[in-house]
Image (cartoon, rainbow, N blue to C red; front, side):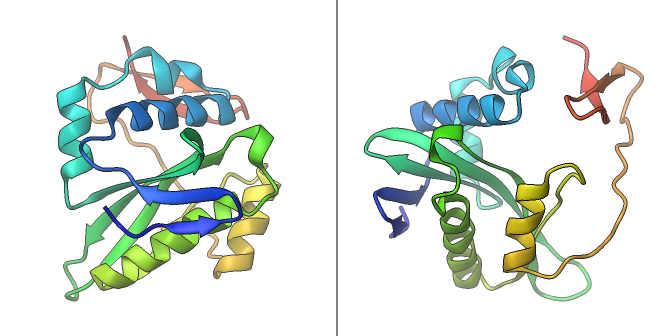
Length: 176
């Protein structure tokens, strides 16, 4: 377990293989924050899968706690580079419960990930934000340098269908 970043009354810590209930709570926070309970709740991973993922050296889940309640968190992946002996950390998801926003929780989560990245010798953290998500863009602009790139979802098999997200974007989702 990492030492954790403490912010006001919120403690940030990396989830370990023994933190399945906390990871499930984080999935609920993400589903609510993104208004996508289907993706984050309908087909939750089996406990063995979560334990293996949380114990891996390439995945990091950080949770923000107020007492024992998960009020936010992020999921990130360390990507080992091939062109140089270094890695980058991709923030895949980051969300804070509506009741705890505008309190510095998201910034504290990213600061803790920066600390962990530094310990691991990572070169940079990177994240993408959807254009309509002004609060996320403001946060990331405050902490880093903006790059304008395009993102493409490319299906891996014919068993996928297109699904529109709440903001009108289409995403690939496997049929249940």
